[in-house]
Each structure stands twice: as structure tokens, then as C-alpha cells.
Length: 298
Image (cartoon, rainbow, N blue to C red):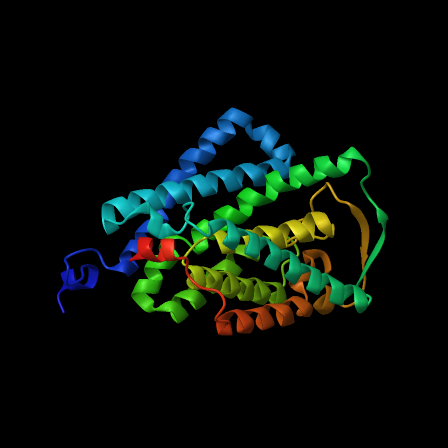
């Protein structure tokens, strides 16, 4: 085997693995540029004083950097249409996005409901009233949607898709699930179990992409999961608690059950629900790729 064959395939094009690797420096370059512009326009001190604004802008910049990187690499390295990424308005995208929203809300409600039945979480009254509920709902959307969409674009987008070509579905799925868990190690109140759960959710989200070959379902599921935790149930999301909450909530009991300050994602109930969802999703024949997206991928 020649050195050239390590990097180039029989078609004399860069192998899919190295295209996935190339995504990293291209993405980081775009991200640094966009974050610098955002910090200049908004002001570094203002971002430091308002962490929710910082989360929103960081999500927007990350999404923009991921999108630009995918466009450049698909054009220069793959000679493929942008549509292969799975983030265009093909027939069926609304259905997939809605299904993701319903799935995220349903899974979170199941976890929180079980925790409530076991006495781990107590809702003691309203924390926000009147029009402030609508303000909190809108602001939570502004904070959480860019964050969820950007993570899906990075972890289920171009690099993941090229690694699926290079290593196959299973190994690519596991590799990116582990990286997804490692990314959250910097979050407040992180634990070993919370990292395992985040990786399990990475597998679930990766499966939603592999089933549909689109990013709308994983984006919808990811966003609805975070939004339901943070706004609907006023609980921490991966160790982060938003300021605009509906309920006054008290969490008690063992950390392995409730997740403690990390939120339900750090508890064993999330592990059980995530594994069950993965098995059901992997086995269901009812979810498949849209004909329009199938044509784009081909």
C-alpha cells in the first residue's frame, strides 16, 4: 500500500475518513471568525454578564460555522449537492420535524413522570405568571433552538455522514455518541452516569438521522427534549438551569435516581428510557427515508 492510497481512494479522491477529519479545522476557522464578529457586535462584557444570551449566540455561530463548512466541503471535496446533508425543505421535512418534537416531549415527560411517581421531584407552585410565561417561552426558544440545531449539525451532519461511509453505520454511530458524551464533560455537575446518558442520547439521535437521512427529526427531538426539561418542567438541562421557569421545583432523593443538580439526564431513569427508545427505534419499520431525500442522497 502506497502512502497516497492511505489518503486517496481508487477514484483518486480524498477518502471519506479524511474528509470527516478535514471538517474539524474548516469548522473551527469559521467558528472563530463568527464568534469574533458576534463578540464585537454584542460586546464581550455583555456576553459574560448574560450566560443565556451567550448560549444563544454561541449556538447561532456554531450552526453558521457548521453550515458553511458543510457547504464548502461538499462542494470542494465531495462534488455533491448540499441536499445530501439532509437540511433542505424536502417533501416530508415538516412531518419529520413534528415527529421529533413529539418524541422529545414524550420521552422527557416519561422520565419526569416516573421521577415524580417515585417522589424524586415535587412541583410546589407557579414560578412565573401572566404574560411573563409567554416571554419566558419565547426566550427559551431563542436560547435552546440554536443550541440544539447546532449540535445536531455538528454531530449528525457532514463529519458523521462521511464517517458512516468510511467505518459503517455502527462504528460511526458509537464514535460520535462517545464524542457527544465527552463534549458535555465541561457542563456543571457532570457525573459518570450523566456522561453515559448523554452518549446514549447520541446513539438515539444518530439513529434518527440514519433512519431518515435527514437532520429535521434529530433537530426536532433534541430541541423538544431540552425545551421540555428547561421550560415545561423547569428542570436543569445538562447541568444548566434557565432563569425563566414556570414551576417552583424541588428535587430530593438519591442523585443516581434524580440526577441531582445535573437534572434528570444524570439519573438512571433517563438511562432506562433512552435504551428502550433506541431498541424501539432500531426495530421499527414505520420510519424511513423520504423519497425526495432518498433521491438527493443517491
